[in-house]
Image (cartoon, rainbow, N blue to C red):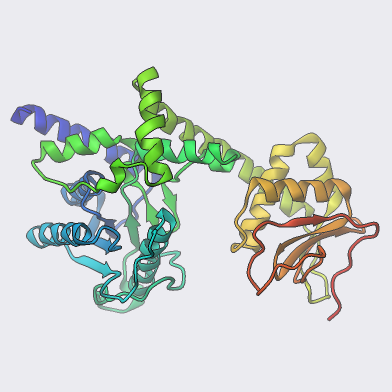
Length: 398
């Protein structure tokens, strides 16, 4: 690539990503942006972009690398590559190594295991640095980097966020994977540009774009060979489904990502309508302690007949607000819709919470085993079970 052409490609890439960041409001003024860097082309492109556009974005840039240890010496080499790059460019690096933390790699490590390890450290880092919406520390307690003190205490700390390098390709893979599992509107929205303290600046560009950007700037990257195999579900999509779709339409990845963006807007519309429905149906708090919240059944039943997507959005909001540990799913929403339609009965959502319908109301109660089945050990039931009742199920006694 000629120098002028490379410079033009890099500038166009950066303009596209920056416009997306501004349109989505990804960064607050004076944000401390911590780029999640694996060493691959996507994450190196993310770090390069943030470094080169930090002034115009009004942010400071750091990096975080998690060495899962799944690939042995290759994983260690990736960690060393990231460390060298950050040292050469003066980028503060927060590191976590599963091996150094004494965390053994499972015999057959899954993508989910690696993700939980990674995000467990991210959450610790956010909590330590004062990131907005940071959850309580979860996962392994790694050595990481020492907390960076801010003069003046908590009030002087700028917002902290973690930027991940998800691209349009990741968005397309996520969409196909979720649709194959029966996702609804919420799932069809794919990866959101913002989720709590996590931001995704590269959702407006493709994997080919990130590789081209790194090449244009003469910056190398490492290749995780596991991404090229069919060991994981995403790898199989990457190796089979997406190439087949791209062969049918060269812009397939871009179009799938654009579809997700449209679904996100549509989901936002119905989510607002669902919140309004919940507020309109809300009943005053009952004096009986097991009842956590209650809603009138009539408006919910009316929505079931007249505007079912709004009711579905309301039920998703109910689960997310009141039972964050109970992952929303199409199956759960279907059970709750059936409960509302029947107007009586119960659905055990977790070992400690159930939705009960009867006497014209829908009540969220701190209740055990109302569905007649064991959920076991205080953990969330793997899937809720509906329990039709001849008479309304009463909340348990004190």
